[in-house]
Image 1 (cartoon, one colour):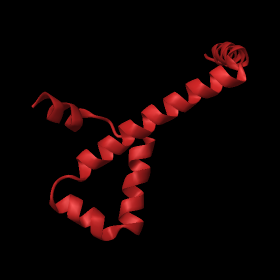
Image 2 (cartoon, rainbow, N blue to C red; image 1 turned 45 degrees about the horizontal axis):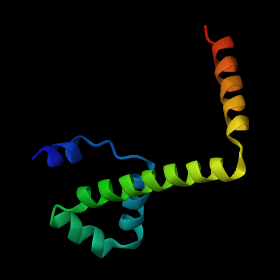
Image 3 (cartoon, rainbow, N blue to C red; image 1 turned 45 degrees about the vertical axis):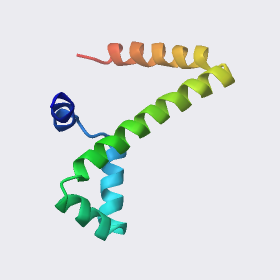
Image 4 (spheres, rainbow, N blue to C red; image 1 turned 30 degrees about the vertical axis):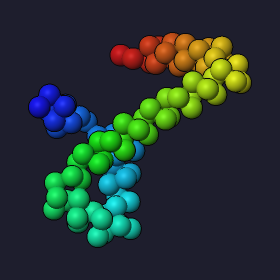
Length: 88
């Protein structure tokens, strides 16, 4: 029951919304079947979680391989500083 509550409270992100739009526009039969069987939300949540985890893993790998962590941190600090300067 906790997992169902978690899935109901889960905020669907970019990748879940992209998958939903794809199903609506290109896989109408699959979309309708999942909607009628009440499995659509579960599918969308699972896709969103998998995609987020994959992006996180790829970003970590790219940072490790390309040694751009210092550059990333430098830009992040500059952006934070710039945002703080322009706040009123």
